[in-house]
Length: 165
Image (cartoon, rainbow, N blue to C red; front, top):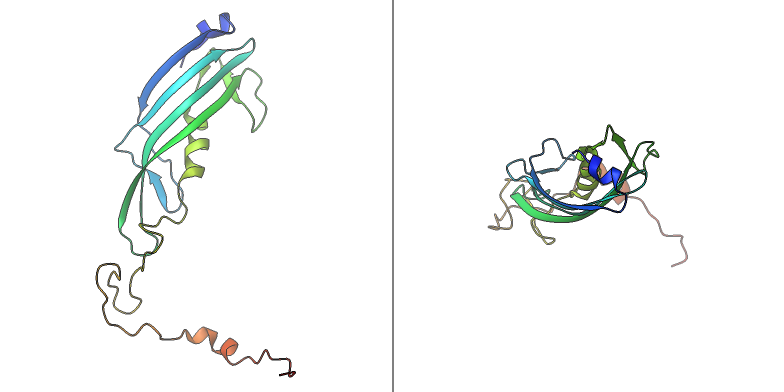
């Protein structure tokens, strides 16, 4: 985005509304829904040596519930406030190159950490039956679920009493 007009007049402001498609905004379990563009409602302000971009970033993420694998979609609404300058400070400001700002990296840095790492359809989700795979939120399958994991047998047999009982 060209910001040369703002750089020539420090203190000047431009309102910007954009809808931008994004791809690859994801973590191991969630992703920004590529079918829904990010809505950017920003205020760009010229400084003597840079630009401040501030405003809202709205979109939608998609994932599968970590317990029952039900597909999920949720909206998000985040606040952006970033500085762009000719000589950026690593991990604090972003580069201003040839009177242009590139919003992709600031958007990625804002949105991706906000995506859920363990998405859940409900905090009380019962998940899938470990025996038959039925979704226990929809129907109790009647399977015996108290089968102990044999890897814990050694700990079950461990006597932790100190003998003062």
